Length: 468
Image (cartoon, rainbow, N blue to C red; front, side, top):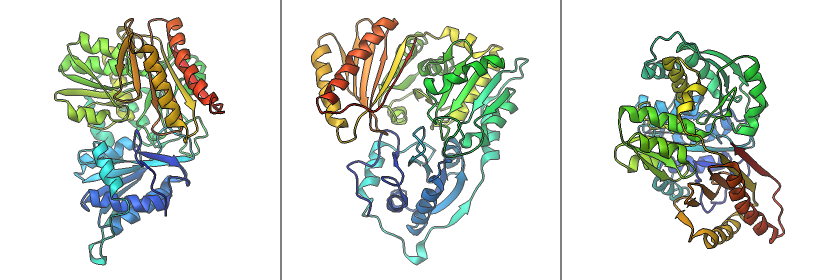
């Protein structure tokens, strides 16, 4: 039997290396618990292109049916299509096999409930409690199995929701589908609404031969010379399953995620004032845009902004870097919708994305990931947090809703948190100038390295990006 880990669900669903942590046996246990949680209703199942995803999907499907739940199998499909299908076809819930942006040896799953919204932390706890308590159904109460290809309906409904007006401006977009399933629909949608596109990394391959599946700056910026050479307006890059979207433009390079969120917030708040829920690693660009538009920004846990959306009244947008929940489309994260909406903005305003983003504030930011042995992650993190509190508590505002965030009087801030999906400690920071930013990041990075060194450990990797 697969050993029950202290906590199965992390920041965003369940993830782990195949077959060490995530394997068919785990999916069988999970299937029984999920079938019980959804009261043996009809559920939709889909998966990304990872080499292990089909096997995990088959194991899960067998377990669900054997536990009395009926399964509608979408097969290989983007994650946004699965979430949309839950709502569109009025199903009880859905499960998507994916490890999102993680390396190819990882896999996992996310669970959605009625309406297409991800399950909450409380829901996750209920499923975990029932992992080894739930039972199979009797021979006369087994669920049914069917297949469905909803891509045509998805394409049609997404285009209809955008109501793109005829425009003489035809945006030129490079679409990097990361060897994943977004290639099944994203190129068609952008072409149909009026963009001229060039697809790269369009062969579906769960080994991700084109590039690393996380569309971060160091991964995407080597494509910048290509973007400039072919005269395109923007590069839209997805992750492995299509919930994340990154944007690169010819002159500005990698566009900070905060500025994309701020752009969505600006447009939505011009139509309706309300609350914008963002993850704790979002910064001042979003805050300034939201407040200038008469809205209210609320910080929430990373990976759980959908819970914040449900918690606060009059919420008009929920987002975290890479991911946007726009209720005008649905209560789920969908990178394909984000790409289509940004294309719509370019067409309606008759400008490229760089010109549109000129009205959005820009502040230097840094992100840093330090690889830490899993068995040391908690104690190293806690030691560094205590050192940071001791150093900064009297000089700044402290927030601990997800990790430790320290906001200073000069509007700079830094956040440290444990990754919920990988054995890493992550740092996020923002400041008014590069020198202040470097100083802030290095001061906390040195605390992490010192804590590791005292335990005789040297991190095998440090990923660090500074965006001016």
